Amino acid sequence: MEADEQASEFGEFKDHLEDFCVNRGKALTREDIKIGKPFTEEGKTYFTFKGFQNYLVRKGLKLKRNLIKAYLMDLNGNKKKLYINKSENIWVVEIPAFEKMKIKSVGNPIKNEVPF
Image 1: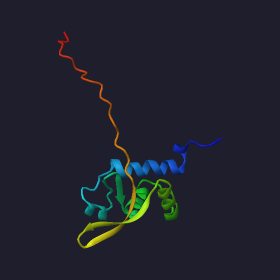
Image 2 (image 1 turned 60 degrees about the vertical axis):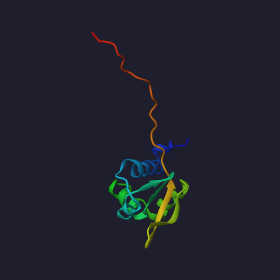
Image 3 (image 1 turned 120 degrees about the horizontal axis):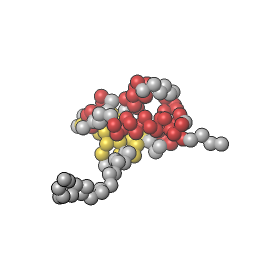
Image 4 (image 1 turned 90 degrees about the horizontal axis):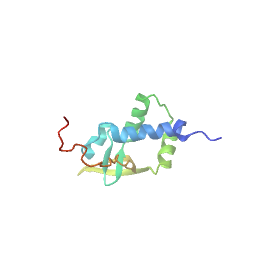
């Protein structure tokens, strides 16, 4: 019997990765990547390995570097040199951006009727 992926260590890792990339304070510019924030543009999210590893430790998920790297690769992660400014490039992890939650419109729930 296979364990549910959500209950596995990999499932917990994916949840933390999504939380790090979507719900945490995001970088407004590429410069902010240097302080450990994830930056998303054109369907890709970029962050430093160290910034994400520190996040995992703060959340209580202490994984070895090689396991974090393997999990990121399983999620189509790549190591990439990213242009920051005219004089600086840094090594980052690049992953496909998590899709934002789509809210289905239910129309106008408030009608122009007097409730009483």
